[in-house]
Image (cartoon, rainbow, N blue to C red; front, side, top):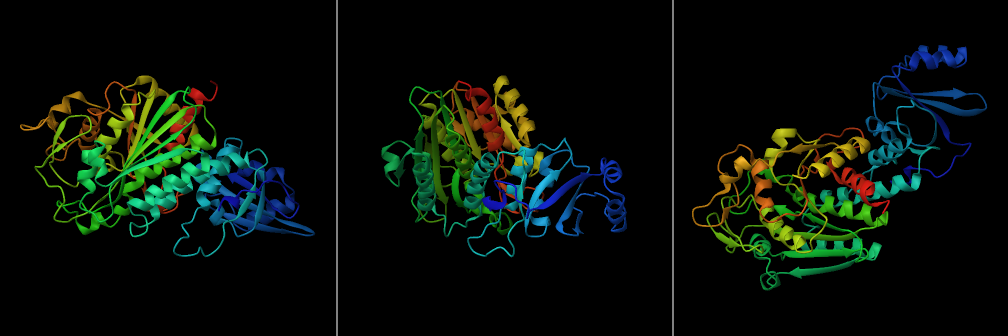
Length: 457
């Protein structure tokens, strides 16, 4: 799939013209009369997704691709599967379509999860003169990593397998990886990670990755790694459990960001913490009304065992905070309330740091990785009060659920600058650059922000 981006031009490559609706008439006037007549006769009008292949005597054919009213390159992210199989050379496109974005969008759309079934046809391949093919592949590889992990069912991606994926990532970039497994979590003071995962035959674990020079600025990274979520004793209905292989999407997105940081050799010290559990059901499952100890020292009353992600994240965030990073980032497929608020395509994020918010919003626009700032509304904090513990882990009722989940997590972070993502991590219906299945939401925007902050130091 990464080979869908070609390194150099070749006379055998089919010239590709990408045409928007606004520029179409002007383009027709600029080409030979015979060509314009043929294009009109074929009914091509540069609508989004339209394709026309024009034979030329003694030459390779000319390919036309309609962009419609597309304002950014990612709207053309399905071109590699729309165009017939073959090699193309981009020779004309609207100036507004950034060529580097086109390259990445092409690769994002070329993705296919092939572990269990081969794809029916390979994607079309392209050479884009003004794009850095290596950089596009590097980013796409990180996105593919997240997608592959999320798409793999829990029968093949259990807690041990996800730990191994972290070890493989660490080995690729020379990072140090260690894991705390099973009852050792109690000895090492990760009681909530242990409580959530203890009912499963697949042992819970906390996996840490360290990379970078010790004198570099420190970045903390946490990702929710629930390899499958039954809901525990508060069991999910079937229609909601169907996609719960994706509940480790936070860990997958954290790993994608880690991949970007390490591949680019960003001058930071990276500390990634992934709590990895299987929220299963057995006689030893944790229960509603249980009071759990936490690494932070706070006691936590359990309201609903299907709100398990914030529990494992709390211990992991407490651990990451102990390293005193300049910035702490977490990704989690945390609440359905976030989907109700913003839908599936926009990644909501929380932060009280105005500089981080501004930088991230700017980076998101630049990268076409949509995010939206949500409020850490202090007025809702009292909804987490418990009469018998320091805090209840879920607020009563259904209103403001993503906000109260973020407020719960904030209790375990302290004064460190913090960025929390409540993502979906899934594409239910394919759209350009985003095939159906697991997806990365937020890592490209965060990485661009980190590049702007640290690449020049």
